Image 1 (cartoon, one colour):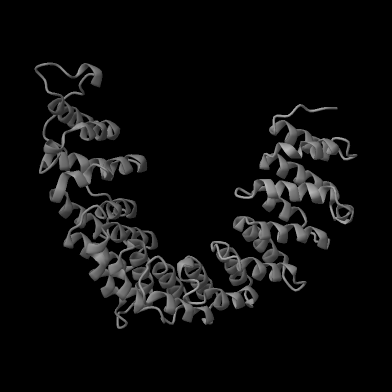
Image 2 (tube, one colour; image 1 turned 120 degrees about the vertical axis):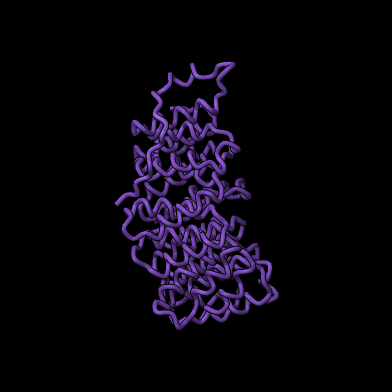
Length: 426
């Protein structure tokens, strides 16, 4: 059921196009309001919205007629029009709050209208708005409405923290659901005032809640948090361990003080593959040179799954140091089916472009390459990598590839030489 908003009393015919409206004796704001009224009488909500958007702030605020028009557009317009008028309604001020609260809490209203109003309430930093949104969460009558209410509370931010924290009450009827929603809101607010309520949930029985808490706490540099994150590296839930790894890998500044590399290294061999992958990629954020031999050990193990090896290769490419490049190039001599991947990683080097290009050329001209699986693919990737690295000294090596028996290798070599802006010989 849609709320029927009373039609305006004034019955004006639709004015001429906007370009002809302004005249010295007819101020544009007044004409816009008259035009909006006439457009509403004809159900032309896009025109109503355009007119209201053009009204100055002093004509919008505390104006019952404008409020009436805005609510009509909200409740009778289509989705696109609802989104447009939703940007205007908060400018009306507190006069709009009570009608919005009435709509939001009316279970007989169309859900789509309540969704639209729920989003708008996030722009009202008022106790009544916060209380209404909390009530929607507690009722949990519609998943989308609940989700919109959580987003609106997160938008309100710090003024909503106390009310959201109250959702953590373990005696509530829907306690587990409310805790999960509360964590989502607190995590999105991203303010230090959320640390205390989040800490209450660090040992929650629900692993998803523990995961969300760790993800939120990881963004704060509170001295209590790193030790708590370390304790979660042994959590029984893989998602929790993964979240702890990701959060700790963002604290390279504490790597030496907390001996983080030794604490994280066992996670590279975790029983859960996703934990291993997150650890490998996370360690790539650290400038510590001792990370490379740790990753090299994982890459060189015959017990390492291919997905983890791919993640380690990617991580070494991000590290982009000469030892990391050497580790990647050494992988090419192991007859691994992942042979093209180290080449791609080396070819994306930024800091060590010249070194990377020399290592690729050296491999291209070495006897090892003959034993490489998928030889043509490897040569193609080397040609592409050399083109990306931009070292003109590699052009002679690329020219040698122009005589390769494989058409695709010759094509990639020609493209690389062209990228290096060098003349291409036949």
